[in-house]
Amino acid sequence: MPDLNFEVVGVEAPRYAAVPTIIFKLRIDNTIAQEQVHSVVLHCQIQINVTRRRYTPEEQARLLELFGAPQRWGETLRPLLWTHANVMVPQFSGSITVDMPITCTYDFEVGGTKYFDALGEGEIPLTLLFSGTIFYKGETGNLQVSQISWSKEAVYRLPVALWREMIEYYYPNSAWIRLHKDVFDQLYRYKATNSLPTWEQVIGRLLQGSGEEAHS
Image 1 (cartoon, rainbow, N blue to C red):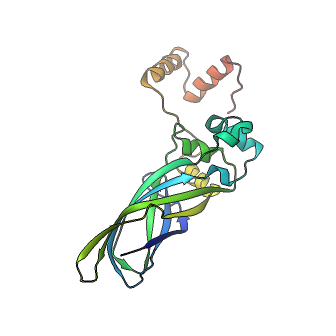
Image 2: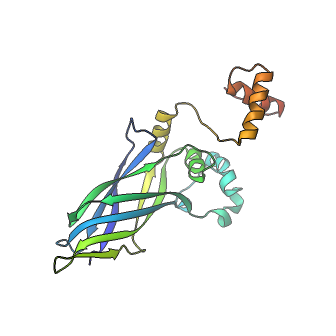
Image 3: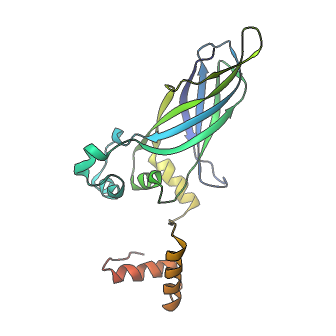
């Protein structure tokens, strides 16, 4: 019966994808090298191990919404779910390296986006948790099925610079937020009533009214 182990051997952010994407190069090794694996339906949960790096004062301030004041981080810092991925692994014996694409959202209602955007430099500590179904050729040549052990995982430190370069390529000098339709309608009326040509000017006017300084 196959015993699969997993390792991230590289990562890249391809240009010209339909949406922002990071591709993990995932190496899969079967302990029984001569065994024929017909295919694998692989599931992966990716968690951010937020306690496994240091944070500058600027990063701590930007992480206030996620984790509260740094004085409470001993209680509030917990692994943060980033995303899930599914991969169909083709037939192999011994080992194989496959691409595992991860679609990256820039939605600031998502905790992972808030966390990544708060970091200035360094690396993002990730843990990849694997599960799924293995189809393989048994000793008599017939097709057998087994499950990947829930204990299978891999760790990887994703460079913050790679994520930032990818986001900047797809969203140059910009960010976006999602609003409920009724709130958007109110903003739109405010924009039209005050003859403001851009949304930046709408937000800037509102910030000035609240006593906050808007920077262009």
